[in-house]
Length: 260
Ligand SMILES: NC(=O)c1ccc[n+]([C@@H]2O[C@H](COP(=O)([O-])OP(=O)(O)OC[C@H]3O[C@@H](n4cnc5c(N)ncnc54)[C@H](O)[C@@H]3O)[C@@H](O)[C@H]2O)c1
View 1 (tube, rainbow, N blue to C red):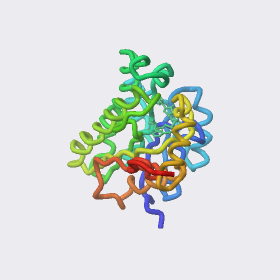
View 2 (cartoon, rainbow, N blue to C red):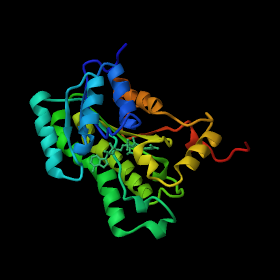
View 3 (cartoon, rainbow, N blue to C red):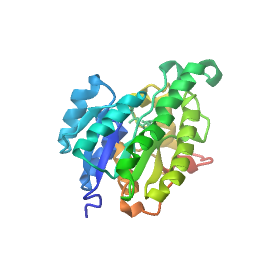
């Protein structure tokens, strides 16, 4: 049964075939959803258009989430093709590279904090605000991507931890605000996966090694694992679920200690 048949989904955050957004887009498509994509800038245009085509979509347009006018233009233009849509996937994060290495206090500064929070957290609310008229009263679902650094301190992740904490709080406030319009808002907290963004975090290799050693499932997760969970959360199968953070991390977050 294709449980997303008849649903339309906007995917924000596709950069490569390693992107979590790619795993999500594939899973949504497999379940019958129609897809539209944004790309951050012209450098990504060709690649995103090609990947969109592979999933039967001819909708791909630019949107830098740092720019309100680009967000407005994306949804205004989309409206010419889709009057309304059902699913918004936000799979976007950024911090300047000097923020993601070394000790927390040595790396953090005002500008790094501002950029990380604006791009990785505020952008979810900015997209929700603009997309809202197109998603209201049709059992809509908004999904974003978080990481364990939102709730636990760990090396190198630094300012992205507070930014993800802000993102997860935004999920709860958006869920409360949009529930009356039938829009659910959730996050997936994924385990480490080698993507372009994750490669910017110093120590990714060690993070992945620890996860595979310590997690109950004794492995790292894949974009397919995340995509499958995303398809569920964005579907009517999850009609009673909102404001939640679902861990797709091979169970790493629940472990207090192990003797392996
Ligand atoms: N890879 C991991 O280990 C991991 C784990 C947990 C959560 N996440 C989260 O998953 C999400 C997707 O990251 P990914 O790992 O797939 O990496 P990725 O590099 O494939 O995707 C990051 C995306 O963010 C986009 N982006 C950055 N700044 C932008 C801007 N100003 N405007 C528009 N788009 C912008 C990039 O274009 C890219 O498409 C992020 O929120 C990340 O924090 C990743």
